[in-house]
Amino acid sequence: MTEENKSQNTFQKYGAIGIAIVAILLSLSSLWQANNAPGADIQVMGVTNLDSLHLSDTGATATPVFIVNQDGAGVIASFQDGGTPVAEFLNGGAFQLGAAGLFDLNGVADALVIDADGDTTISAPTDDQIDIEIGTADEFIFTAGILDIGNGTLGRIDLDADNDTSIRSSTDDQIELEVGAADEFIFTASIFDIGNGTLGRIDLDADNDTSIRSSADDQVEIELAGADQVVFTAVAGADSAATNEYTEIAFTSPVDTTSTNTHNALTIDLAIGNATGGTNAVTAIQIDGITGDADVTETAINLGAGWDTGLNITQDTENIGLPTILSTIITFTVAAGDSGTIATVAAGEVWFVHAVYVNVTTDFDATGDDATLIIGDGGDVDGLLVLADGELQAADTEGTGAPPGWQGFFSTDVRGVYLAEGLGFIYDGAETIDYLIDEVSGETLSAGEATVYVYYTRVQ
Image 1: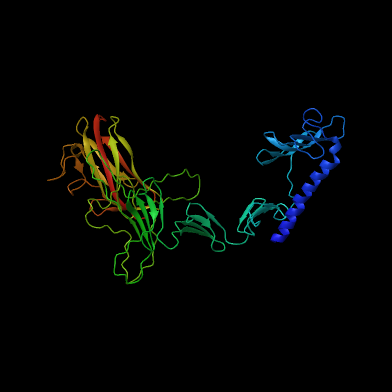
Image 2 (image 1 turned 120 degrees about the horizontal axis):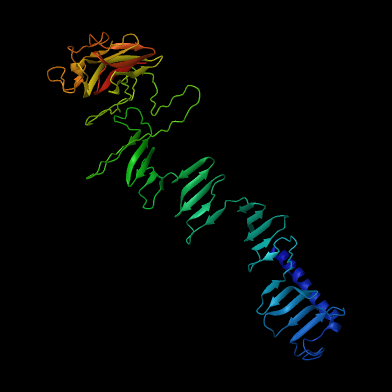
């Protein structure tokens, strides 16, 4: 709106109000009454002292409709409806509406002017919309559920004293978080850019030494306590002439001085659900197969030098393709002996049994010294190993240099036909490896304990 139009509009509004007040004063002059006794401090012609004036309606109660109290504190002019104030001027120039008052700008453009030159206004010329105009431009527009900053131009919200930290949009469909005059965070469709082309960092703890960051191009580090412990690097270009680590776990263990301390670089802790059907498998680490290249040496796992233990497998954990040692403790229970299963070969599995060993830890004691232990399967109950009473004593040595109590190493031992040649035996399909403790003369066993070890490789 032009300055001329605004001046005309202002004159029309406030001029009309002034004329209305004068008309009320003139038309109701016969109805006035003073606050005090009639005629006190009042002069109708040539007024020289007018401290208080009430203009009332013509009803019997003479309810005031307009009151002026020039010398009073608080309200100095009051417009009333049935004795209830609807608008009041206060001592000092302030203006207020009554409890049920309504100040209606009636949708006039630029209706409320708030600066000296008349180009900063608040108005609602469009239904259900509020415009805040600054310097002749509508910079803020409110509609239902929407605050439009800039009204189609690129908006900005400054957050600090020197106006170099802001939330703004310098490009269509983009939001920048500016910190210290630099766009540190940029949001575009499906992209969150940290650093805007510089190396980004997200600190996660109070002392800022645990973070996710990028200290080099095409690289991401996970920093813990000031050290990069996990590093991800993009695949290097051809002919880099270097050893390239694309995912690296790097840490230095502390200098321990007491207690028992274990430091694991990587721990995989799985919880297995209770499946109720189907064919299911859980694999902690899966290394997929590859298509080989004649000019590339492919290695799935490579152990460098210096390790005390290359691979630590808990006993009785079965491996496929690597040897497994399965152990079962046999303990005397009744005088007549005992039997049971040491290992089960499931249907579809193929085992290559290298050897069966026994470690006697408590003498097998029987009247007549005729206790026996045989190990075999459903096809031959003693096909793997046969130990007589003398070999079931904890102090017995199988041969020169052999440790006491251990049996099954030397050819002098009584092996079953499966292992007689010392070359191992194949199990293909469902089968069980069983043991039998017996006492020949009278079933008088009274003591004995041993551990049976089945040394095998499952190949299928």
